[in-house]
Length: 157
Image (cartoon, rainbow, N blue to C red; front, side, top):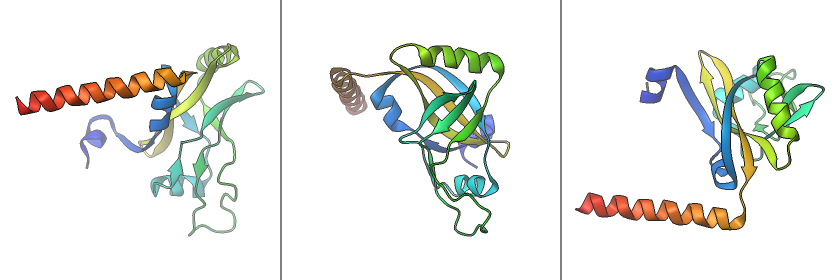
């Protein structure tokens, strides 16, 4: 068992590293997902991509859009046939209201940052995000490179 699994009961399946590069991430929420059986089997087989995922509001509910869960090959004909289908997010009413309010503000979006299994259930972390400008991205890269150089110098010292 990995160290991550022992401590918190979480098994991280995938992270959205592109979200950290493209957005300033603010508040984070943990949400459950409404999935079909073949989708959870694909997730356990690590056949999922959060890369283009985002959260959208429909009729007072939140839906995860653009997340690709590969079709489960060993599944029957009753499995999911659309890998990009919208999936309903499970949150409490207060959290949903707070997220919807922020989504309606100009410049805010909600993006999935990681998907993991907790006690056998698929959970996704959603972060409220504001898009970065190109110069912000360059600044982040320069800071990361500088931190890496400092770490190398300290290691050699």
